[in-house]
Image 1: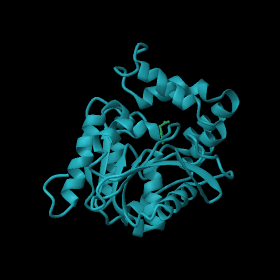
Image 2: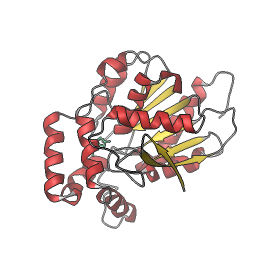
Image 3: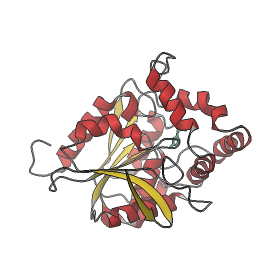
Image 4: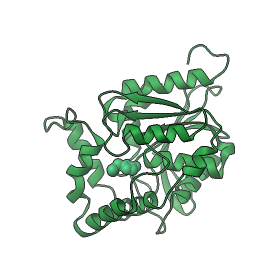
Length: 269
Ligand SMILES: O=C(O)CC1=CCC(=O)O1
């Protein structure tokens, strides 16, 4: 396990090596998850691309850090991690709040970003009312009280079968996040709006979404793609908010095709 102290926060991360001439991909995960959600994508891409995974503050094995925290704080953490690892430029693949962090990183440190894979995310996610209601419910009754409602957004009914052990495992992942970290991330998402930033993005970008995403539905992700000059848009069938878990093969194919298309002079990954 690898840990770094960044902005006074202990950050849990992992680096998986590959040829140095290939673009580094950094995966940044969603609300209520840690970096293990990328496993089935990472095993497919390992050896082709250098990979950096990390748990954002307040999640997984990373510290919660000082509260309140903003999406800008998360982006500063990511910039600090990349600086520490001497990664000069990377493709940032951000899922949901991870996509907000990716847009914030682009806004603050565009030198670090060579391309964006915005996965089940948007320029703005949810409303103040919806986030305040979620924060109130979690503060009063814990994350367990919202798990069923959240799982309906994360996964399709086909995945949410009681006999699917992966489903119960992801319920555990959600409910075991620190409450303060989860609530802080909800507030950070509530207060974030990258509408203007999205219009300024000039690096190659793809917006990808599960066809049954209940948190950032295809229409919303399409509206984000339309804000970003020349952004591509792709829908992944038979999955909801977390394609890296539900359809890792399809998501990997989208990532590989995108990276191949933006890497001049290379015919294969
Ligand atoms: O928990 C959800 O509703 C899904 C989600 C919204 C932002 C995020 O990162 O995950």
